[in-house]
Amino acid sequence: MKEETNMTNEQTFSDIVFGRKSVRVYDETYKISHEEMLAMIQEATTAPSSVNMQPWRFVVVESDEQKANLKPLIRFNTRQNDTSSAMVLIFGDMACYELGEEIYDQAVAEGKMPADVRDQQLAAIIPYYKNFTTQQMNDVVKIDSSLAAMQFMLVARAHGYETNPIGGFEADQLAEAMGLDKERYVPVMILSIGKAKEEGYSSVRLAAEKITEFK
Image 1 (cartoon, rainbow, N blue to C red):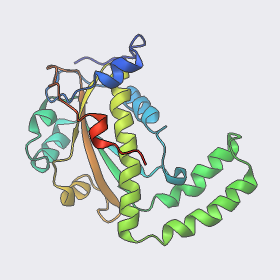
Image 2 (image 1 turned 90 degrees about the vertical axis):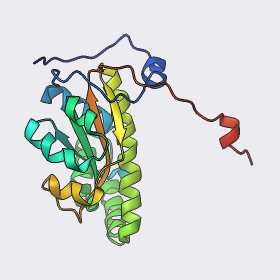
Image 3 (image 1 turned 90 degrees about the horizontal axis):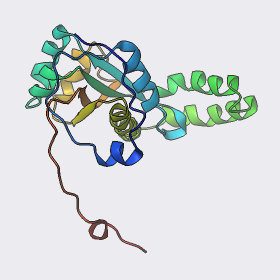
């Protein structure tokens, strides 16, 4: 079992972004330390979110026992589960505003926001979020959490790993399988991560001119 930190400083922005491919088979002997995983999550969560409510929540499935628990819920994505260092489950917290005061207090403590601005913003934001319909909140947390997911994939490449974003899973069962309240935590995406054992396939993209209009 290997365990080490891998920050590949010489990689360029272009290498990280444009060299990304979805990798589905990994070195099953390679494990990522909790320290490095938390560092990658910390870096990924510099992604933006609506009024900085940071609704993303992460569950890192790495043990054989929990991977076996996850396997029936991921449909045709079992190779990733079997060989990856971990499966990173990203949920959106439908009650993310409950941490609003903590987030804004931290901003004040770090000198990034005046106390009166914190008070004014929280007085407006918290009631606004509490009045969202379930669908409105669902949309917000999924959009914000997807931004963090994309950033995690790029951060992982900077650390020397590859990933595969997975949307094929039993969304109605995932939260409960991980011991979470399914009414509060909405599954957004699963990311497999590890040391690549295959290159991944190149794919094509439509031309910008085809998908863009200028008005």
